[in-house]
Amino acid sequence: MANQTESQLTDAVLMIRPARFGINAETAASNAFQHSDLEINDPQPLALREFDVLVMTLRKLGVTVEVFEDTPEPWTPDAVFPGNWVTFHTDGSVYLYPMQAQNRRWERRTDIIEALRKQRGYQVTHIEDLSGAELEGRYLEGTGSLVLDRLHHVAYACLSPRTDMKILREWAARLEYELIAFHAFDTKGTPVYHTDVMMSMGDRFTILCVSSIQEVSERRRIQQRLEQTGHEIIPITTQQMGEFAGNVLQLGTGYGGSVLIMSMRAERSLTPTQRQIIKKYTRIASSPVNTIENCAGGSVRCMLAEIFLPRTNA
Image (cartoon, rainbow, N blue to C red; front, side):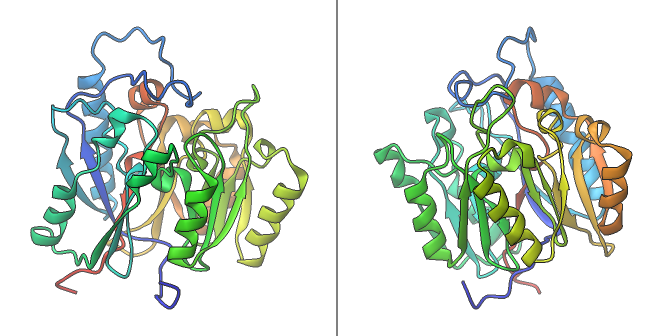
C-alpha cells in the first residue's frame, strides 16, 4: 500500500438506505451526540426522506452514489452509517472493521462488496477482515475512528471505547500509515466517540475542533503535522462540533472540482470567516438530516463510505 498512489478525494460513495432506522440503545452509552430521549414514534419515514434527499443532492453535484437497501432482519438501526464497518482502497483492498455494539456487527455485508464487484464495475482484489478483534473487546470503527490523510499516509485517531490502540497500531502497520493517536473530549468531559465528528481531512485544509484536544503536546503534534502536509487548519468550537460541523466530507465531482458536503444544521453553525476559508478550497453543499443526527448521533460524513476501488471499465 505504501507505494500505491492515493488520492485524497473520490467521486464515488456507498450509501445504505435504511429499512428500520431507529434509536440504538446499545450505542447510546458511548455516543453523547445521540438524543435517546426523543419522542418520535416512528423515525423511519423521516430518516428515509432525509436519506433520499441527500442521495439526490450528491448525484446533482456529480457524485456517483452506490445505493444498497438495508435488510429488515436482523434489525440494524444504524445501517445508514456504512463507513464504520468498511473501507475501500485504491489497491482494490476492502477492510472490514470490529464494531462495539453487537447489533451493529450485523451491518457488515459481503454481498454488498460482491455486488460492487460483479454488478457495479469495481475491482476488489482481496478482503481484510479485522472483526475478530471483537472477541478481545477491541474495536476500530472504520472512518469513524480513522480520519485519513491518504496523500501522505497519515492516520489521525482519537482514542475512545470504539477506537482501540492495539488495533490502530495493527491497522497502521498493515497499510503502512503513520499513526497520530490522541484524546478528545466534549464540553462535559466525555471522550469524543468518533474522530470524524471532531475532524475532517480535505485535500488542502482540515476542519478540526482544536479545543477538544486538551493535552497540549497532542494538540501541538497534530497542528505541526497538518502544517507539514500543507493543510490549513480551520478551527471549530466544541459547540459547532455538537452541531456536526466536523462531520463533513470533501468529495470530487464528475463535473470537475470538489464539494464539501455537510448537513444543513452543520452549515448553519459555520461563521462567515469559516465559510470564506472553506470556499478558497472547495464549494459547500448541505442537506437536512436532522432526524438521523438526533436519533443516531451521526451526520452526513457517517452516511458516506468513500469508494477508492479501481473501476473495471477504467
